[in-house]
Amino acid sequence: MRPVPWDRASLIAELRDRVWLHLSPSATAHDIALDAAALLGLRFDEAAALGQLHFLLHPAISSFLDAAPDLLRRPTSDMTQNVEITHDRIRGPVDWQATRRRRLVTREPHFVTRPPRRDVDIQPNRAVALLLNEIRDQARSLVGGWAGSHEAGLSAQITAIGTRAGFLASHRTLSEVTPASLSSRDAAALRSPRLRRRFSAALDAHAVHQRLISHVDRAAIRDSVERYGFAASSDGTLFEIAVLFALRLQLQVAGFALEPLRLFRGRLRFGGRRGDEQIMGFYQETPSSWRDSSQYRAAQLAHGFAAVHDLRPDVTLRLERAGEPTRWLAIEAKTTEGSVGVPRLARRALTDLLAYRAAFAPVLDDQPMWGLGVVWGEGLAAAEHPVGVCTRDCIGEALDRFLA
Image (cartoon, rainbow, N blue to C red; front, side, top):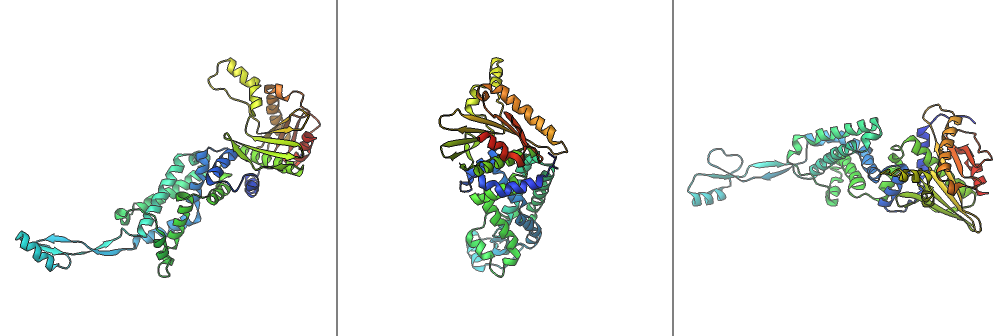
């Protein structure tokens, strides 16, 4: 066995490549957000916020913020004529017909004038105002919520984007502009050869806003999960997901036809079949039959604790065969950011597994193999023992023993 330096970036890249092999990519946007939340250890609102994060960090938004100062210095405008009634200072051309009519009625020497006025409350200025306001508000929302507690560097980056957008949104040009989205007709007009070059950044940013904020679709949520979901997860969660994916892969190698991970009462499960054998996997869930027999839970109830908690393995497998008792396997994953060796990680996994053994003894008694610890590193194979410990590269051999 040997320790392996923790490589968060490589593990994230690996999980991004494999995530849709295990989650259902054809679900609705809402279901994908729910599944991602359960998998990544996030609340639903945090998973949904991945779209906001994707929006703020999208290259099109950065390009738009770079182009916005020029759009505000030289805004698009229409010339309109306002009606003014005055008797001393005359601005603009006099409307003599209206002046004569008014004098006949009022008997006063007033002039009716129509001075030209530069109107900036038109598209695309309205869309520019909308985008700047949205960028500012989405940044404030994220920094005030979960993004501020996940990573200081990410929070600072989002804050800088929001501050920049807020400064631009306060430009005097926009004081008379009503924020509004571009219609398809407006967007088509801005794509004309005469305007396309100047407004291309605003058009791209508007399209990203529509896709990720206004009308979130399935592909957008999938893209957000791939880009930012794993980055928002802790190291422990990332390794637990890697172990879950490795277990599913080895079960498929062993001949099981597996279903995608599905959400059931807030937790992810999967089922599979090999001939007359059925297997069920539980991710971050205590099976109901375990809860009913939990000594840990019973002790808390006996002491009158207001909040009763269960011990919960990272992954639990249930194997059912005709004419045989149900088999259970509790799986615990352990990793580290530092240089902690494989034996120390293995001992940590064993400590948790033996706690499960004590708490759920009525279920785990008489199981030929009831526990498996999977630790970060290489070259550790599980021994012939009811509770085994191995590294991720040796999961297949350990799983074969459970399935034998």
